[in-house]
Length: 422
Image 1 (tube, rainbow, N blue to C red):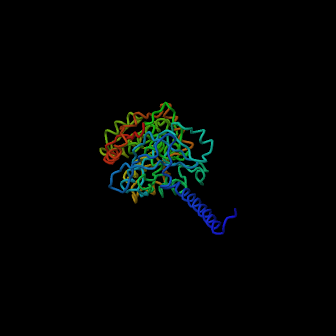
Image 2: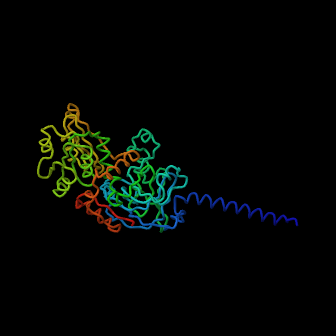
């Protein structure tokens, strides 16, 4: 039977309306992949939400909040976080000393288990990190494509600094973290590792052998990673060099072990706390100097027959220790700065000595994930780096806030690690 004009018009309107509805739904779904509309994503056979520790503003404690399950994109992996280190860099953000987008999830040195790959992730990445793999993550997450990454200088990755450090996102300009309650975005300090799950670009990961424990190995991605970059790349340290480390907390104590592993002839630990200096002896220090009781520069020169060390590393980020570091090196020596400072802190240097005596002052933020992180894992696996002696405290996820408070008060001798998921 022929359809009447009015019936035909109603059918056409229904088809147009349906098409518009489908198109609207499709656009909404695409936009929602980076927002609250992605709430339905969950790990196969697993939960659809998780908990993370959120920093809101300086002076306010971290709070544990529920999040939608973060969804990895191409080239990214979803990691079930097993452990996350407690680092001074997080503390600088939490105290407002270094500007960073907020609210955010802090924590940037992690170990965990691969539970998912982002859609369209290259097969070689899937094969390298299959589901169930144990991994360790580096805090500098190289994009692999920028000017510096192509030159092999991944520690200067343009995308990492332009997106993650400047905006708190990954390299498409979007965070992967959204609150479960209202879908609002939360930013990521590196991968936002102080959470039950985190999204990490594959370039920042290395396989962790089953022989290495999750908890102790978390520090490989920042404390040890930073120390390795300072001595391997910035200092270009050679066997037989003398090395002084000023500030022997979590990162500084890792520098002691790396210096020893690289064949340093003398390893001088400098700090103001006897407890840390005693611990330094167990990590490879041949000499210790309490800078609160004696002139650190003069003592270093005494130990080195009046010349100073080949390499001095400053791991605190203070004007005083910056000056001590530059004065502690021999003529032609290298002063390597790895300690982050509060905004507007300025170091002073004797320009004439710098020029005449060829003193080299070098900044170093970390190592190079793709080439260095596997080597760092091998150092730990071989026993050349002692993970057990470096960790001075383990705490539960719910105790993370207290760990940062103790770190701020100087109560943590080495490195504290938060154990997150069993």
